[in-house]
Image (cartoon, rainbow, N blue to C red; front, top):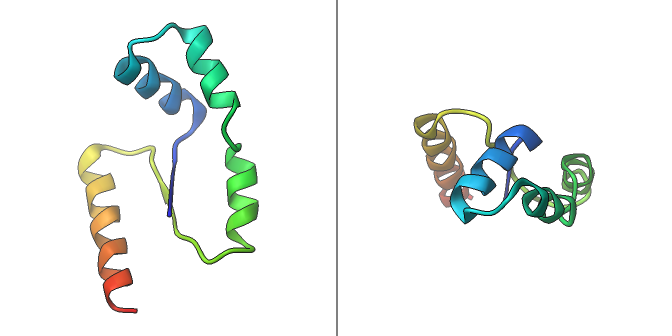
Amino acid sequence: MWWIAMNKNQLKRLLKRENIDEKLAKTMISAQASRKQRLALSKKLPTDILENNSQIFEMEQKAQDLAQKLLNL
């Protein structure tokens, strides 16, 4: 399972969570697989991707739905 955030949201969260400067945060993000790479890989591997661009309660609901799906396997 991957949580995927658009770069703008990802950058804001990283800056807040890690208390680092923007240059370092962008370097950290660029070292990760891109959204496009992750989505391409998901077509080859069994995985679930949750978009992480919404409010916390929406993300919690997505996670609960996925957990229920996995429990039903």
